[in-house]
Length: 436
Image 1: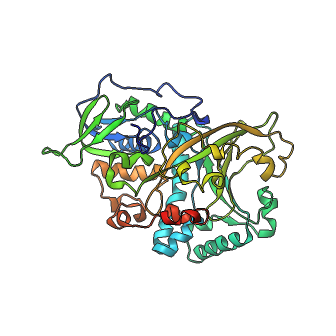
Image 2 (image 1 turned 180 degrees about the vertical axis):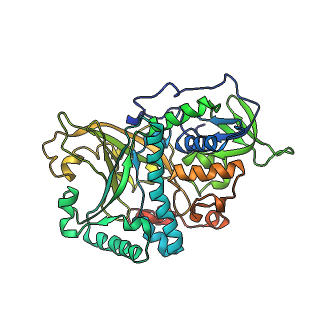
Image 3 (image 1 turned 30 degrees about the horizontal axis):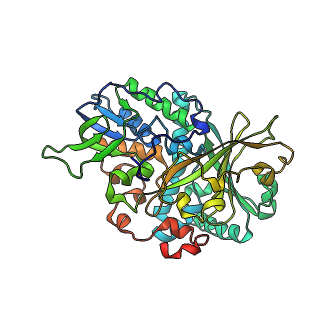
């Protein structure tokens, strides 16, 4: 399991995993079943949301479901992210509109906004204890030129009637710093978003799933998957603890997908990112919004204020992005990105008005591994999982499952030879042009 595409045996700690639940190393049965109806590889947000929706749609008969997790529950990207529940209603959407047309772009934007509402409704109805806060996201630009370009895309979407964009506020540039509270802000947008403790949400989902018969097997790395079905229509999944056969296999493996399905090599590429927790010795200055601080097209940080007064901040791309070996094609979340370790020191004092004498300091810093996929990432897991549950159960075809058309796997997407992620970073990577 030493390949960089596989998760290392032990990832480094993160704040979200400081309060792990009793399912962290759970095994529903001492041995693996020989066969089951559905196998899901991965016990993060995707796996949790999928089993949640499958169970909600099975009234008469619940299929046998096995979830295989290489490490602990929610120990991958979901357990290491920034805690955001944040839609995009204008930024990347305007680029999608230029490439795919306004109808397809609007479909994605509205789906993103609907995802926030759906997750908020689920947490409320289930009374999930996960520190969920529904708030406003504030996106700040530090360059007038950048703000003008982004604002032009935003106005174009408004003019074309994109519903989600109508609920996004663009502040007059002269008021950006005062309204956002961010020093040097040249422009800002705000819209409804949320933030939460991701591990606790996933733990809740799996607790309910297990109570309804789902078999969760943590610390069970999958080594290989058969390249074809056998004569009886079964896929063969080989793990370190035995072999399982299934007719329905779902990969919820994020950055590690190509390690098991080589056809995705170069299409789903792992990359490392860094996140931190900042605390103050006394009461923290009031901060109620979540933020994105955009320095240019490729460099941005993101943060949320936690109910306990601490701040979760991620990003730091300017500190390491020029060194491909630090992040691109690298799935090692067992150690921090050293070049960025001290990036967050003094962060709140540098960027936020009223924090100059707060004494804010870094309490924790960690690395996580996500993925870059062809053209864009499908990050809106909850509603994607709802649609895919119908597909897995055979209730609907993808086109009728309520998932944006741009998210569908296609020969065109897999055949796209462009490296979109390296193209995004071509300015800081100009010394590596031969790799583009």
